[in-house]
Length: 149
Image (cartoon, rainbow, N blue to C red):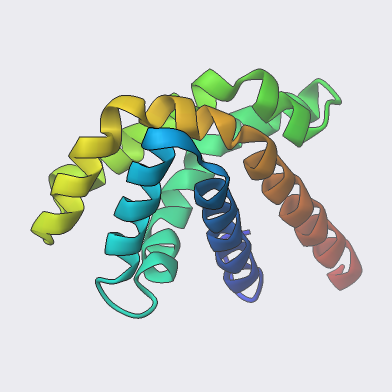
């Protein structure tokens, strides 16, 4: 999933998942998240897409053990990610935490640190959509590999 031409599709779908997750937020915390997302999107055109692309390999590596567990147990990757949403969140946030520490844009670092205390719950809530994305593209990649051989 991390190689072309599938990579572009995965990144595009991941951005759509992120947009949908942000759009679903409500209340005061939702307002804060939506505002922060708008600030980050405003850094430069395509910034979110570029960031997702830069994080993709690390995210795929982090999700690979969960995906392998699902396949070994003959489970749907989506349902397995949902059942293990806490592990998913911890794995993905460990990556973004490291990246935020090294962020060159002060706005990115400040925004991330402001939202970080509630991030785990938000990432856990995204597990169904993340699982759907992973399942969709892993099945498509497998089908493409089968047809190529």
